[in-house]
Length: 326
Image (cartoon, rainbow, N blue to C red; front, side):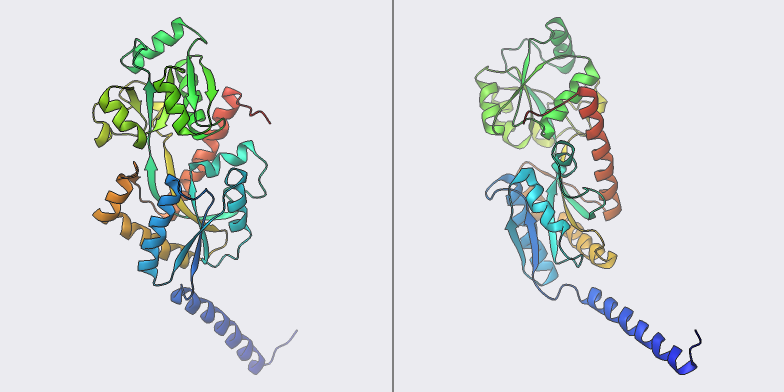
């Protein structure tokens, strides 16, 4: 089809105007309030992180960032809302490491990788292996030997079946060739209470709520995930030091995602805001007070972390033959 010179120029002008309008819209972002989905119940530790992030984003972006709690369905309900939202940066979500675990156990109407754009990480929380003081072990090496001498006789608690705590312990079993019985509880509080009472022998817990128990001697901390020791638990060695390095990378993390197709300039702008806050001592202190370690990343690094953890979770579930009861 032949186009006249005038017609070609007019079409070119329309294309340039359309592209230019899109660029201007991205540069002006945001021009209205942003919804931050928190797929958790109000009042929990993760919800507190979402509100802290919302406050800082509101200050930096100049538009209200409103937290919308959408709990239920093991975080699937809230995450599905994001997957169905327009990819314009006006709906985002705070996710935990369970984002790439839940879909492996439950049927989800989205792909945890392909249907989202990684924006950036905020914080991470390591796991500490706790034992009741009555257990005659003082380090990971002694625990492994003791467990092997009593195969299947030791119990470990988790806040729920199929959670990150569950996978960390099964990974420990796989790497150390040990066998222990899984006892799921309804929450981390009941799991720690059971450990304190001697109802179970071990428990992998996030570090925040356990520091007082370890420092007072009511529980023993044998090892922590991560590459370096934690300041609050400087006497507890890492699993790298303890000779089980494969567990080091299994800590929890928190980050922000958007809908797939969100323009990169918008993703980059929000990532820059997160990085700015994570460099502020005041923001760092607020995270540390929640038992979290500030953790900054680029969108590309966060996307790689999500893919790697999804593959690792799937591998642990398969090798440990973890199946949840309906």
